[in-house]
Length: 229
Ligand code: CA
Image (cartoon, rainbow, N blue to C red; front, top):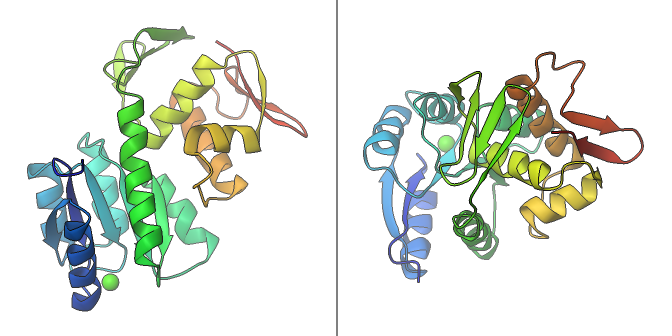
């Protein structure tokens, strides 16, 4: 059941916050709430929620900054951004700051709950993974979910880890963008191929010696990607 999962809802619009809190509690989750950026950051670090629903326009500090500061501090929990605007810039910027997913307001509660459930399940399904992959000067430890490069830990967002783990397991195969998105996120994923490309460019910056001339995450023109160990 969901009763051990704790969700931090960060939203300064009272009506939306109360609605989310009520619906999440009804679905069996434990709910914490914050109404401004600094409080969100503090609770995110100290209460260690299993998932954060994070509004972008907040008093005190934007959701982008909260997200980035949490990731900088090593926090790995999934973060779903609640965005009021539909333009691509928001999504890409959110992913760059370390968000895993986003929902555009106004959203249906049913859709949001499905997304929350899917994100939490993804984490659970992969907890059994073991072993490690070594490529270049990088080592990806599947059990601890830690990436090191030249012996130093590189912080990955949850989605970056899942994508990199998927590439490692499927090394040597040409993978279409559609197949990658379907296998990593499942059919419930609403992102675009551009958001996949954005994750790939973030990963390249973290694992490649020269991100513009990659040796591991290779572009297969007209298809998608191929990972070389
Ligand atoms: Ca707001």
